[in-house]
Length: 309
Image (cartoon, rainbow, N blue to C red; front, top):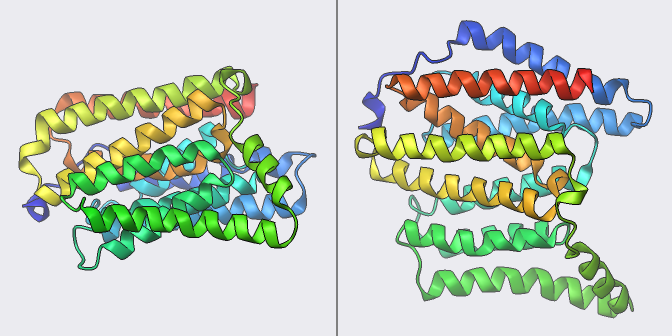
């Protein structure tokens, strides 16, 4: 059973504790020292960093993904966050990440509760709310439906609940805009949200970093399937498959549609949770070596992006 797994020694708390603290301080240096950032953005950046780290750790703990090493999730949250540079006070990205984390969590616990149709409504509402800031996030709706199929929860009621959640958000938005006489403005806004921006809107460093994360997620998933799949409980296997699918889709959206700033915080949280699970299940040299290599690359990219360029 999962509870009997040996705790991974890939990264020890003695090493991770000071690294986590150092990353937390350094990650906020660019925005804290920026002359363009307002005082409110600086406070929001620091507060959001701490809150989302706590949320990611709680989510990982509550679904049984990590055990003893509570430094792994915060460490990668800070590290990946600093590398991607989401601490710029971009509030839309902060709101979207909270909504998507809630949607992911509502989806992933359907295996544990009765009345899971309510979880489907909650997840659909969160995704549709996030899509008001970035329309391409609607791609996550079919991903969520696939997730329900993975858990064996896809049926007419779940599908209807998903559609109902979306109808509630778009119906309320459209109705409010119509009543206020802002219907045309609302349509114009939605069109602008769905405008394809593409790679031209991304910096080369952002493309490199997101591609590195996508590459690591794919390799990590292959190792998980090849080496530890049969030794994990069914629920953990399904949770990991759904989580990998969600993260890969989010990275793909960020890369393909050039709206990385609105998905970066969510990618940080999800990656930190998955890396936590990977380090807890590593029993092979290839996995540990891969973790060290990617961690080193992320640290070097963190230094290059925030302090050299």
